Length: 318
Length: 271
Image (cartoon, rainbow over all chains, first blue to last red):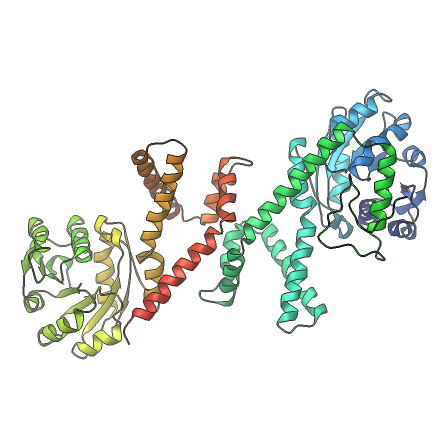
């Protein structure tokens, strides 16, 4: 079986790394393509032994399972481009947040009568084979197709099938989840440093604490509330700390975060469905975004990067 | 000592004493004729007489007639009362103080050495036999006295022995806690009224909801977080509502309340 990635960014890199580390796929059976050869992930993929090309069509031709690993607004244009090369044998797996199976099937059906489409939502820890992935199967994808994708994704973490209407919620929870965790870990490390720990040790201990807690929860029958209680000796340090968390509305912040991510996903989907973005604008915003991610520019931390408008004060018009 | 032979006395005949007595009577633990209560005036004593208990205005009589004696006066009255009854206190007596803020140390200091003293912190719903009580034993009280008290008072609700240091926490949690529940019930009902339900119906339903939830918690032994999760269907009404509660930091506020009441109890305690 050969696997292709349209897009050679973080997601393609993470999945390729995960699959090869898990031994389910040899690197040379993987192809990735992108017009942008300057991405740091491109050299990473090359080093892995993945076949890299600038031709999306080449990727399609050499793959059985084709991952669409580009940003959501790009998907329609990709589908237009590679549609003619999609055959009945292909399993098209879209990992794009907010992009529905029906929108993909609709685009592809002009080229191929029964395209096999699977939509999945995964997350970056696939890179260390601790991903969280859900998938929903499209109209023409068989049970075996789903199982094949499930097997692939299960090699890099947890994977289960869901109804498509749950995928936005999954995005909010485990799609964005690692970012919440990184933020928490950064802050925990700050706490450690404030109380006297060297930074590296603080980061290490914080991460291990979360990793251990997560592992305990996954392996336990008990409710997280019970596990929390087990740590809180009466009048002790932990319960004092938890009181602070509760006072700050810790729980509601997390609920808000999951909700915001899920709602935003739906908004993006809605905008994408309307296909209001011209190809020229896509190219511009993609380039601008790449510039914004460049470490040589300083961006005010409060400014939001929007894929649809160019609000950054420091980006150049091209 | 057989509970049936037990003669129970109450020094002070107010709400708490009345609640405990009612519990003992309802559960058939002690016949009314074995209960003697004293109070300065008849104001409180009428209700006792109506239940068949004996009453008096003489505290010493309670000590002379009873083996198990509950001290249920207001805190500022107690030292005077202890001085008064001290001569009549013997080694056969079991003295149980319900007086808030008066420590075992104080009680033992004001009573003869070696007296079997215990300290009880009940809460208001004892009057309907759904109380939460904790007690601590003094140095003169042994397993027998503790077992007797626990067995008798289980007729009024939950009764557990604890170290004395937990008593102030119990005040914050359950003594005052009853008021937190009333506040919550009122707010629930008010929400319902806002949404169009008549107040008295809303109030009764609010109370029943709290009762039912508490009963499930006690009977299932399950963690409240799990019970909460069981009620929350994905994307449903409950989780939406809970989110509102979390946004309002309800948990932290409740923790603050328990902490404030406990600290206040500690401050108010003598010695």
